[in-house]
Image (cartoon, rainbow, N blue to C red; front, side):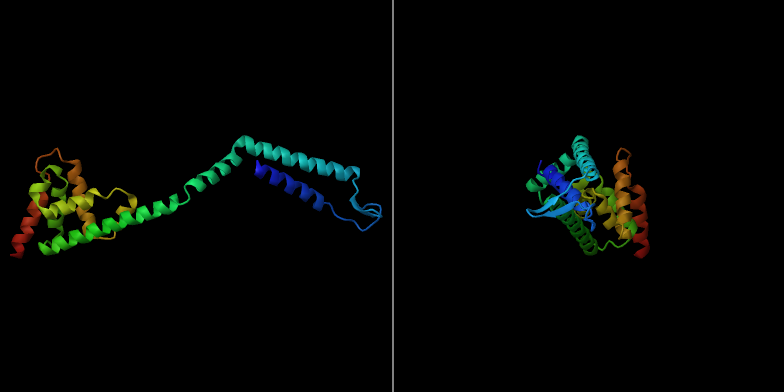
Length: 202
């Protein structure tokens, strides 16, 4: 209600100051007398003033009817109770990205520790990581891959992952195995490719 009153008062002041003060004596709307200054209202000034006041009142009624004023008031009340929600969402997203980057770095460290350098072998590990039932028997490298790829749930995660070609190859292998879990030995082609590369290297 305070907003409506403010708009109404502003409109009245606008009407009072909008009429020009004429220099000629007979067409002046602001008159000076012995008792001070007063507003001289002729028919035209009065008509314009009433039309402007009516327009403001109708505008306020229409705004209230459309719910625009209520939306502003509700947003202000919401902001009073939850002022940092956008700020908290931003920090949650950043923390989520930081966690994902940390998991990527941990996976890279495990790959270095076990000397897994070939993209095909890394893709095979990611493929095995999609099989939740066999995580314990597949060892820490597969478990770490599962931890990383199962945590990628948001578009911003994927954007970050796309900056690393090797990680994207692994993500594709993980997703493919995830959707084809019902097939027997889904990871066989990747396992065979990895074995062939390792045999060539030795």
